Image 1 (tube, one colour):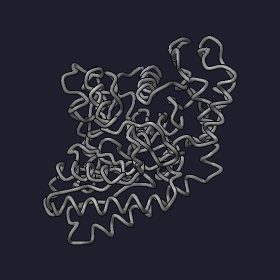
Image 2: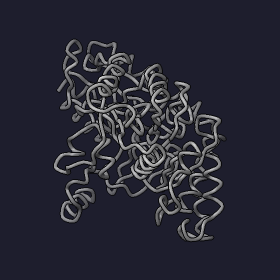
Image 3: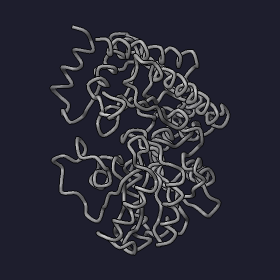
Length: 428
């Protein structure tokens, strides 16, 4: 029995089945390469779901963490605060879009950042309603699930959800839903279900992650900003997957030139260590009473040290420019593949920077999703040494989330594996 198989058996016996995993049990990783328990080597096009943007075990990040470990690992910022937390807040206040006064709260997970953004928005506005989008993913806590625009597997059997959360259409141009359709649906919500004067915030992903890597049209984001301004609604931008240079800008909203009231971030911020942040208008973030924000592990000093190193690496290695360059390379290769008759299963190629996806369909005319082909491609690629992830409401989108530091030759090799694997499963 292989070590991977033995570990899978132990997992089945000890870990709840609701924790979905692959059958790759990691023992070592370096930049964009991962080795499993049987010693097999993989090119990692997942990056821990866009967490290690700076690669597995970047030497600058590892050095910063080791230095912090020699000082202290935990005091709780609520008990004995530390300068590094304050300095990271200062950096994020400057890096996020907008030149207004801002303040930053550090927490631990992406959904915790979302929860705190909702708390701040409700407290500041005195309103309760939050508007989210179909296909959105904002986490697995109760409020995170309520905001998430997908029932199975995230909400199924876990209700009832927190109330005063409404969903409207997210524009998906490939499926005929443009900015006009999405904005009409929002106006219909205000006319039919809830008056805008009750809405505390609208939360949006500039590129939907789990929802299928649909890029929000820039004019759509600008119109959302205008609606929020008109009705005194706060605009929360979820940059948990899109942030920290992933899309070719530090934050994806910068592509549209839109300034949010609150930004949530996590994943790439900690470079592999659990850390998230909420950066928002100073008046909004200061609204809550003392003790209303925080948490025992919020802003772990070890993770904060890693985050400072991550931001240094992003700047010094110009990872925004690199993400744009490699992303263009990925899209160009996939679009060339899509032009061939043998690959008419590729319905769409889309993305921003190194947040790239392609959608697999049974028929390009009907655009009927092909989840079975998607699953077969992932399995074939894994057998050939490439880690891929799927996403989308119909599980028919392949998302490419390689570390931004991946060598170009490894990118090309990964794309070769995709092409060869897709050819094999199409022919089967």
